[in-house]
Image 1 (cartoon, rainbow, N blue to C red):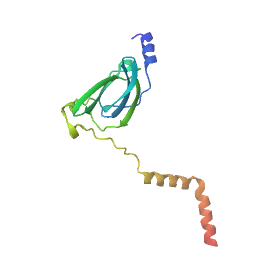
Image 2: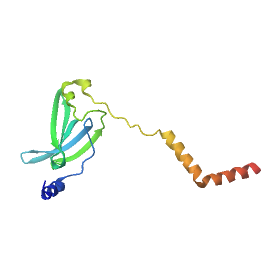
Image 3: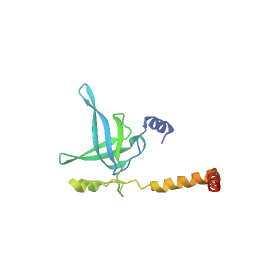
Image 4: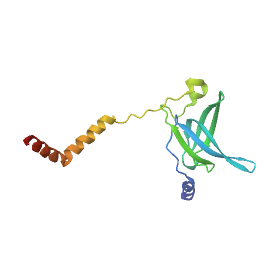
Length: 149
């Protein structure tokens, strides 16, 4: 592709949060009704993300009054004001088309849990690091003076 076209596409790209299929998004986009312009929010599960560059799109699905509604958005569209990641989904597929056949609780995507280090282990590690960073000598001298008194 031409470098001129690539540079034009690069100028049109916007900063968007990192998200993938299975994540629950809140998309704020502008709707033009006659002469009025208002912001509408569409919240649902990302069932696919495709393309790259300025042509990248994603599809969000939600249940509205028992009816499944899907909407496809261009990622870098100027009509999108904001994309919020409401929750991360725990899925093993890039395309979640199987959600179209599911209804009710079966259509839910499990939320990804943060499995970081244990907080007590990190506190102990920090205490060990602080103890071995030279302050151990001062503690040892205090112990010696306390025992000799």
